[in-house]
Image 1 (tube, rainbow, N blue to C red):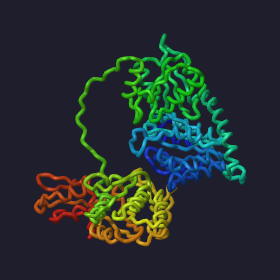
Image 2 (cartoon, rainbow, N blue to C red; image 1 turned 90 degrees about the vertical axis):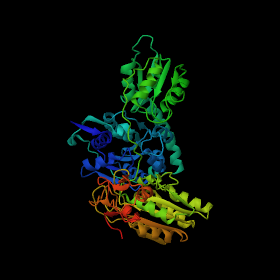
Image 3 (spheres, helix red, strand yellow; image 1 turned 120 degrees about the vertical axis):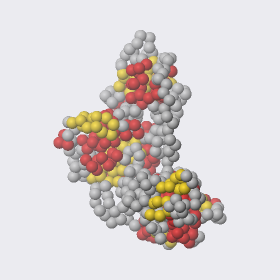
Image 4 (cartoon, rainbow, N blue to C red; image 1 turned 180 degrees about the horizontal axis):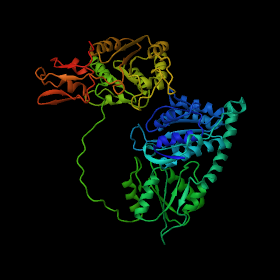
Length: 606
């Protein structure tokens, strides 16, 4: 073994490799993305890895591998679990032969997600066992435990790191490659009585699932993953305890060290809940504070245990207002809650007055082609009754002023359905749906098929920057390469749209402003479903060496370049526009807009 300084996601990946994983697939989503990327970098030649087109496909791929006795890992964030839930719910009823670990990285805050979902609650709903690591070190160990658990009980198993576990760093003792488990898949053995999900099979397996989970409650009560610290109350007369799990456990232990010795229940397997261990923990306690993020999951379980076993312990937490109902916990918030729970004064830190932080709203990068795409549509539709339905990705930032081009944003691919419905209700309104190239393949195709079939009328805008930009530039079917390093034929967005039945498909460079505006104008008024593909590469991947410059003698100080497009490389000084060469990418959009012709340089798009 050897020590490495690792991000939590890297530790999870190395743990999966040490467990002998055979196949890893997923869909990129912060904070989970680095797990699959690390496997791709560190894998052996016999391990298959891919970015799947979406989480549903990834879950089905991993399930098939587990049918054949392989150890499979599927990765996603909490939003992706919604997409993957259909096959997962059925996989739990069918069961698996090889180990199947479903890594779902939750995002309390939320820091980079639409919602705060708690996978612990989903685990109880789906009846799938869940392991909840509190640190990067524990995540490395837990994923290996998860594979063993999955194979032993023939069930998918969740591993639920949260953002601070996924993106935190630690020095971890990891196995050398020669110490890795070598897992050989037996191969798929035909047996329709096991692998074909008829109602009779589901009915019988449901009973087995409930019996298995009852067994796991006892198993988890004796597992080293869960524990009471310490078993006895340390202070005479102290009859208070804290129940916690996940990264909150780290904050709790810091608070306990500073503010008094409390009995702590560490819950690393929220489902099935270690009921017998909880009874031992509650015995002799008058009050328990539950410190957890998102849902009051542990709190509800302890209330249930108290009722079932006739215990009089008072359970405090989110439901009683002693802990916040939403958002991330922090060191300070947990210390304050524990101090209040123990009726102790909070240690005050020396008063420091930090300097004010600069205001940094999220914006599209300087030179981002999405800015030009939004602006072209905005100019083409100026003065008309129009709605712009957005999507999840970098282009969500098109909602910011001065563009103001995202009227709705729900989830991946939803803009297509929303645009269709609004047009059905308001025939005099022009509707646009924006979607990125990666999201097009992931979730937009059913929306296009629905629109063509049901005779909808709207304009689809595909913002094709040749990558999955927001989550770290992962490949997708339109990039012509795979995560295994293979160069493959690109899946043509134009051909897909035409094959579905979209008769008008235009492709244009959005940085050619005049042509882009003309294309939108001539396309928007056509009947039915029509599509415009704005194709220009992401500036983070293909940065130009050219820069725009402003001739101060020619600049008339009208600020049109600043007011119209909001590029962060443009500013105003001494009555003149100026460009920042450190940010400018030479896209020339500002030059094309300048009424005085004062801006030059960059790449011409005439």
